[in-house]
Length: 351
Image (tube, rainbow, N blue to C red; front, side, top):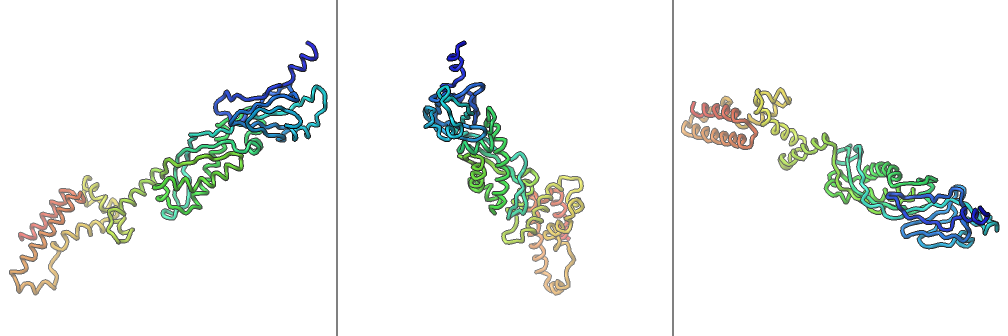
């Protein structure tokens, strides 16, 4: 083999990347035992950037286009290498290509709930899922902070890093936003807005540009969601203007009555089961208590008017029977409890 053919095989005339592998963000041009010929051609396609690295230091960066590599087009590298004239000034340097295309449709989600402070519920754990897109915005930072000297750096590699950044930023952003969970859950765009700005800044430190970020769903863990559902139901069923805690207690008792009626102990067993005997007694006692109780001293003068008393007692008992029927229709008492109470009222009426 002649000297000329040996030199020809060792020199690189064209440097380019065809992106024949899906999901690759950074690719090192193979340079084993080869040198770049002065006057060689560098081809950088649209949505690509080429970076020349000399001894670990970024020397020159080239955007899309066809570039002839000379001392004029490689000023920084020329100064670093101090080219001589041997073999038309060949040189050896690492060349990295970066894809600047937007990586769309990337999914994110909280594998574990994020604990944040909430102005309505104090401390809560939140789950969220959505989509985002990003691109290599600053190849210099991307090279020094993430990809380094690897032959290939893929989308999976960078997203492992971005996932941790995303979770940490989301917890910080939501915790400091002072936006209630119920507001975020009702308006997912609001939640995305709270996170997006901080997340873009965090990505930028690594040379990554955040293109889009959205929240598809936000929820609580099952046990917290069940507690929230109960609180919402209490608010819906409670009296307007009543104390919230009292309304919640009333709701728990009312919610338990139909369940107790299905059990062997009936309503009598709910007091022991829930410790709510007094509250429950008040609920039913308001309907039947007054009619079953002995006459008060104030009722004595009524004996002087025998015609008026029976009519008043009859009307009162009929009203209470109507209230009992209403409780039965709403499922708040069982049929057996209704029959028992009705029987007592009728005895009182008939004597």
